[in-house]
Image 1 (cartoon, rainbow, N blue to C red):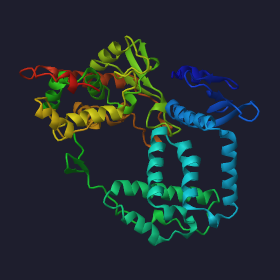
Image 2: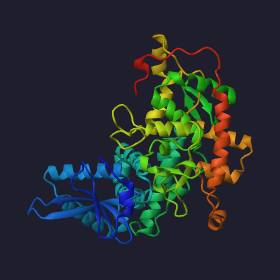
Image 3: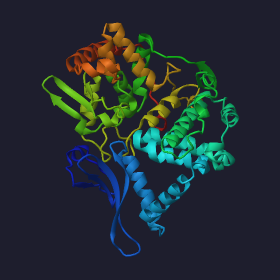
Image 4: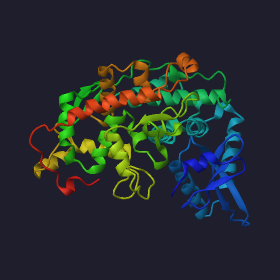
Length: 443
């Protein structure tokens, strides 16, 4: 499957883009939007039909392909996807005729399809949907009740039963509150139906912090000190090449892992002042905000070396960071890999028993690398507004409204100073470390 982002942006009204490897999956453009669709032959008469899958770029190519495969499987099973969707809509209209009879399950499902999948990035929408689906499966009696009959005590009991995992419970509380608000706005619940989710357990579901290796480490904001960074940088040859490159890209760019590992050749440009990596707005965490823009990242020092090397050539996935299977290396892959090198992980304990190595600096996650570089920028004297722009954080509303300056020159200046500071830590730190065995460095 190959998807050309530039071709998608260049589509004009009335044009479409077919996706190689996904027969029937198209990106269709109108004057105001672009939509993923599935084009197929009707089983009854063989006529061509088309069904909408979701909006682009809110829905990624990966999410669209997953939906396309599900619809294709339904057609292969003898079901016309278009007819099935129309039947579902008729069921929704019927339930809407009496808002008092709308079930909890219907409220949740309408919220997922009508709001989450339309307004959140695919990964976030999928995670929220999983949490809600788990609730409906675990509480079938609750799911089948009418939403208008849910009392304050019902909401309290459901959340109180999950207080052992306060962060997950708080997210569930927020999702259900939003689902009730969506149903009230859409007229699918009586106007008098209370939204207890916004009131019960307010302020009582607080995280106790992370647990690493079975040990509660609290709500730490881990920042690696220079001595620790020097140890890790000296130890990097023990990692596989993909792990080393990802580790260094976090430090040398201050970017998020999901942005780094979604890098494609078309995002890289060589300009008059050097190499730049431009992260399209739709691939950033800020994609849902109208004022957000593409993220500009200067490639200096190690970051430049890594990207230049990995561009020659790019593998079949189309991503610059590709694993040995020829697939995109993901943030989850890298986080799992780093955890597996921590001495308290089960994998590391087995490796230690075989004479293998573990990380010399422990109790950190990939995101701590981004926090560490942001802290180093502050220590170097980088002004706050420039450092926050480098991280891709949106400015305050008023400032963002009146200040459209993008700080390209300042980004290059301060990322350059950061690169110099990090390079100073690359000096030899003692005897070379023993390399991991091939079995330890497999992805």
